[in-house]
Length: 294
Image (cartoon, rainbow, N blue to C red; front, side):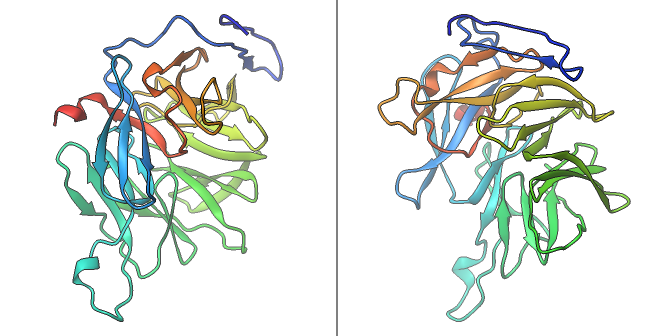
C-alpha cells in the first residue's frame, strides 16, 4: 500500500490510525537521538549498532550485559553482569548485579543494592529477587516494589517518571501498582508489554495478539486516546517517537528487519534507512547520536 493514510473513527472513542509506508520523513536528520540495537555475532561479544537518520550505521563494542536495556535519557545501557568475577575464587557463589555502562565515558558501575547470588534480569530494568521486583531510576538508585506472590511471574515492569506508579504484566493482564501504597489493580486485559513515556504524559501498551496494536493512554486519566500499529515500544528520550520494525521488507534474510520512527501521537512512520535489513534483535532503543564523538 503506497502513501500515508490517516483515518479517524469514533470506535470506542479512540482516534484509530491506519497507515501505509511514509515516503516523506517527519523527523529531520539533525534529530539528537538515534535508534540503536544491542547485538552479538558469536553469542559472547556484544556491540551497540547505531543508526543515524543521515549517514551510515556504525558500531561500538560494549560490555556483555544479560537482558541489556537502554536508559531513558539515551546515555547508558543497563543489564545483568558479574561485577566481581575476577575477584572470586573456585567454589564461591557467582555474584550478579545490575550494571550501568555509560556510553559517554565507557565507565561501568554497579547499581547499589542489586548485587545478589542469583538474579533474574528482564526488560525495562527489572530484577526478580525473592519475588520482589527492583526497579532502577536513571540515576542508579533502586526502588523496591512489593507485589502479590501467587506463583505467576510479573513481567516487563515500567516505572513512571515521578516514581509513584508502576505497570507490569501478570497472567496476560496489565496491572497498575501504586508504589507509595503498595497496592496493585487490573488495568487492561490481554496486554503484552507497557511503558511510560519519559515526559510522563503517556502510558503505552502493546496488545497480546499477533501484530498487536500499540495503545496510547493519557497517563493522568489512564484513558485510551490513540491506536497505533505495532511497535517495539521504545520511547525516544524526548517522548516524540516510538520505534517500530518492518520484517522481511525485501531483506535477504527472512528474520532481518528495518526500523521505523513512529511519530506520537499521529502515528506517521519514517523508515530509518541506515537500519535497512540490519536488525534481527529485540534489544532496540535510542541513544544520543553524539556518543560516536566521545
